[in-house]
Amino acid sequence: MDRLHIYQTRTLVGVEFAQEPARLPRLSQLQHAFVRLGLPEIKDIVGQLIKSNPDQRFSAELRDLMQVAGARLAYWESKVPQGSKCFVHHIRFDDDAAARAGIAEIRTKFPHFALLGLYQINPSASFFPGAFPVDPAPSLWQPGAKNPLTKDSQFFFNFFPDQPFLLERVSQGTISIWAESAPGLYDTNNYVDLPEDLTTALGIDHFVGVNLNRYRNAYGFCKAVAAGASKSVIAEDHHDDFHWYGMLTKLIEVT
Image (cartoon, rainbow, N blue to C red):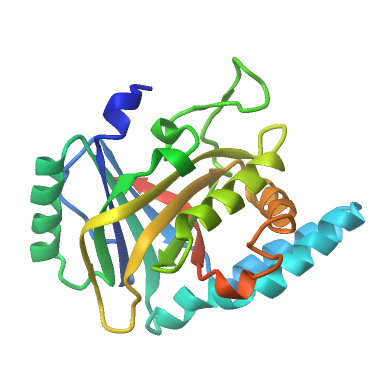
């Protein structure tokens, strides 16, 4: 990874409510679309993991996480119009000029997006950002090994409105989850913030930060997040003051 280059890039994040994802113009080599999993599907995944896993500590942590996360996950569930799905578009631009031209073109051609913003990768809260979303990521726990994209990879997009100590809280939660991710449950994350160009539809918060995460599979997501949350502001003291609204997604296409 060219560290100097990755931190000079710009990241477009778009949230779309539609029956099918918009076919965006080809603006970058790193351009992908994801579909959000609904709450019933997430609850079914969690229920199956609890039922099939003999580890009582894992089951208890996962139940505790869902008690805290329910309202946060319901945010996007409540915004999606009946009959529509929720899609996330991710594009990484090499430079600011290309990013500004790209977002202007998308905004003109696709004015229905619920959220459309340009962000910068924050190096203090991003692990292996060059690997997101689809490239092999270095293994934090097995130096020399790689964590590749798989057909079971899960992507969690976490949206943050402006609030006190946001970076500190995002960093604490992210580090806690990474600490519980051995041997290879959590592949990579990009925390993007400092929005330069951001528009939202009526009823959608002004999200100043987004954490873009890739996990090995549904178990990896639940195991790492549940254990990490139990040791951080995500589920511990003052978690009611930490505002985040996430969606679990799957990669659906490379556009």
